Length: 317
Image (tube, rainbow, N blue to C red; front, side, top):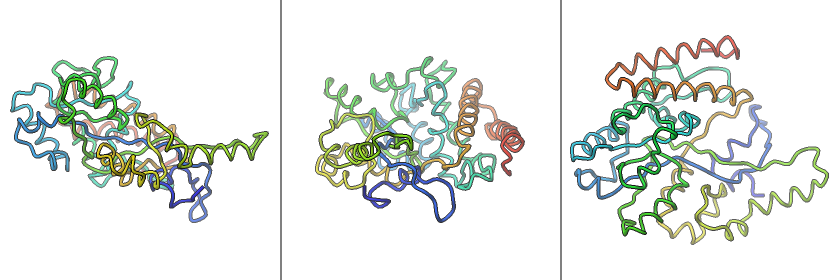
């Protein structure tokens, strides 16, 4: 099926079981997903912002927000999260950009309570000052950031790469397609997606493997429509004309190629669920009082959570 070199590095990392140098491949990468920054070019231009550098670093992002608001845009920013379920994925770029992490690759030591990670969380939470007035949560049941951006009520949105076709279609209807822009987040983009496995108890093992080969092969992806929410995890597909010659996918491909994913360890599901919940709660606390000391707030939460993980999961701090 091509082996390691056929897939994006972050996607391949997710199919390797822990085990040092002799790590076993347990799945085949299929779909790739990443996080991007969407923006309206004319709004940035109105504020005198260079879109090439507007989102390069957390400081650049904050300066962009300040200038957008100063130009008369009431809501510079929208942050997407479904019930807080992807809050950690959204914050990951800021944490990684600051030199922080969440858990070591072997799953034995916590990193999210270290100074670098705290700095990343804080710089991400500062965006709370630029969300719509009165928003109490980033939960989409209370504020639909995706719809607000599509209606041009929000200048910048952090969210799923798969939104782009929908945004573009709606912009084309209103003659605003050339105003829609995409950029990488200020740090490695989070890369997720889906993998294919075959159960050991499968009755028709060879047929199941043949299906995996078909679903991950170039003919399958060449026949797929271009408006899917996910993209191929295979590197060679991005050299195809339908992707390589289309500016719409340039940023998506760059984000997946240079992005990162979370550690693949046996307890990561439990770990991510709890940390997700904490990050979502931090957003609610920050939105309730944007002028509070965010470093103290984040540090307190992360120290408490780290203490619980140390006891319940036996992970070192």
